[in-house]
Image (tube, rainbow, N blue to C red; front, side, top):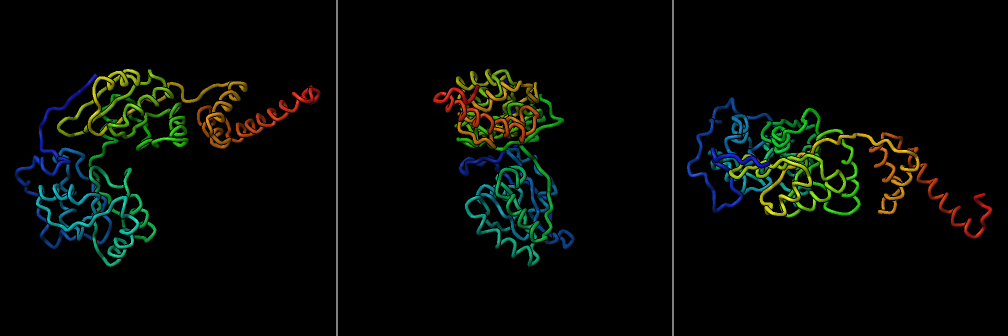
Length: 329
């Protein structure tokens, strides 16, 4: 089932040649001395698509800051132009964060008020803003959040899935053992799960989720949240795979997945051994396999780890018994 939103407001385009903002919006003034900001790092939430979602406080903070640390200065520049904000920018992103952090800390310690923004939403959530916040905390510099839109909360609120308890997973690891381990940990997750995915990896993620969580697990897939082509698709993981085999994925996706109907597995000792052997055969270490099974069963990781050691000892004895049958008598 798909929900689509009507176009009701200006949107922030990713294409600088297709900017829909014809007339700047009259932003609140920040010219009076009382509007000067105390020295601090201000984490400013910005729209995730619809410009009307920005707050008056965010506008005032961006106008009053000494400098804006932006993930993409061109992208943020269009936002600033629309709201008539002339505060200078400095780039701060994944590729220059280690160079920028000492510079920004020095300016903050000298008394500057710095506003941190990401391309969309709240900085520090699945972006390098986290590292700057940690550096400020370590240097005892004030960190002041200016709340704003968030794709995580927006997606789970409209998903139709349990929202009293949920966990945010960001982007899943792309491949390898870390991806297998993360997927395995979600199999019996008792809370709803929210994660991000790009269009070119959506099908692989849906198939992996269906294989581990069950193709019958309910899911809500939000596309282009708050933007012109916002869309919600709801169904099961199996139905989602069928849908996106016909409809080519476009835009950025936020997935909300229903909690496991069985938060903990009840397994016999022989079943636990079989699960351990399967995980070990996939390349997991004894420690990782024990941790994953402990999360799924509620049993002690130490007990499961000891069982994995016993499996290895038994295998050695069994191999020797083929040559000397009396060993296991």
